[in-house]
Image 1 (tube, helix red, strand yellow):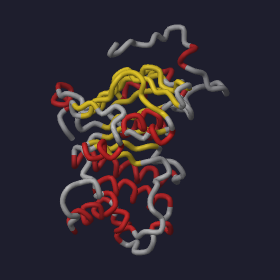
Image 2 (cartoon, rainbow, N blue to C red):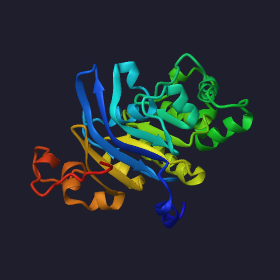
Image 3 (cartoon, rainbow, N blue to C red):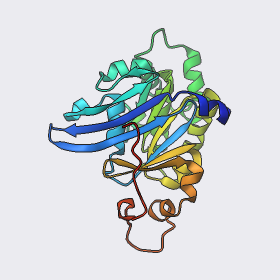
Length: 273
């Protein structure tokens, strides 16, 4: 793992600066969202359904246009380059790769063909070493020679992450990697995510509803509610935060989930304004 002191002084790989996102020129979904991903770190973006987590990833990866959305204020900087509202293929070529919710593998293609598809945007030919490196992380995929549609849910998630590795990314964004997986497979997938991060130093922005698992493997995190960042800190700080434990980690005694916006002591920090 990289030295925390080195990472603390390094410029962030990704900076999302006070962005607002509007759909259909009317619906304001994100309200001044700001976050950073430092080099070599795993950053978790947590929140309930509808909080704006997936929209934030789509704003970074340029996928808003497919849903008639756009960034109307603020900016997104990757490695010092402004990428807000850039075309998705350009953002991928810059080194940002998003593993979509629901895996989105091509079911009527084989594992090898899916992996080769992940490398379409990078220069040079795909080598056997590239594929062998994926199989080192996911040896189960090497045994699967049929169509990807016949893989289990866990194997499909492994294939989706392996496809991301084939792009030689400098940032991986993952949207709900635990969705639909058994607890045992969730543990396995998250352990591999951390292994890739530690061995290759690839920073990861992780959107996840399983807050316990995300904060177990992440270095730091942000919590979203209603299109805003309402809390941020190291993973340890968030795990130990009484409100986070109650709202997201199952530590509360009440039957109804409350919201950070109802806390009188809470004041949202104004960042990058």
